[in-house]
Image (tube, rainbow over all chains, first blue to last red; front, side, top):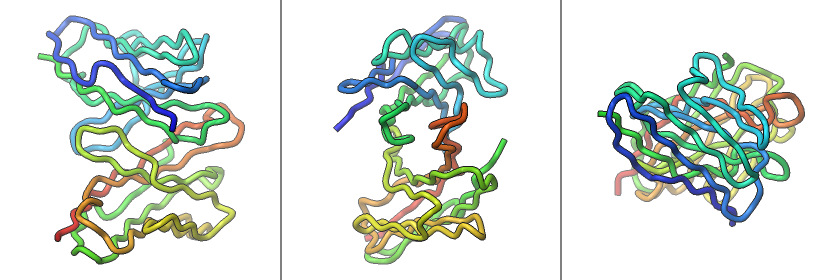
Length: 116
Length: 116
């Protein structure tokens, strides 16, 4: 079946640095990628929606200059957390979407970010 | 933002019992209602989903009951097993057309523990 991968699976970075998280669709083309953030023992909150070749659409309250999303190809989307702070420590999960995929069918395994 | 209200927050069931998790949605325009299972440190996995034109859908031990007039839907796990112990999320989405295609709104989550 279709697989969505994320890299890295976990990362530790120092406050003030930037970190990039990759989301790949391994055997299918995803016209749309969704990025979610999940704090411990909480639900998934949508951060942004990215469509291949166009600018991402950010949810209300999400800083677009801090969370840079690039969706340069049909199989790769990246999320860059710029000038990371400890409060950015979270579990980041991507999901592939777009026809002919079922809505919310494929989620990545997540990336645990810890900012020290 | 439209919400999906999920209950209970946590649930303890004996092996072989029935686990029931409930969700209530607000926006009658939403037309896709999935359930997800998430293990610690992993991304969510789609379990089963339903559209509002049917009142029930069953896949193996998992059943969704949908009450359109009450704007409620529930997940029933029959013959619950210790391996079912996980966090379960309901969600809703506007699937057809519109700019929010594929965008999921998640419930708060239910931590299910199945005792052997």
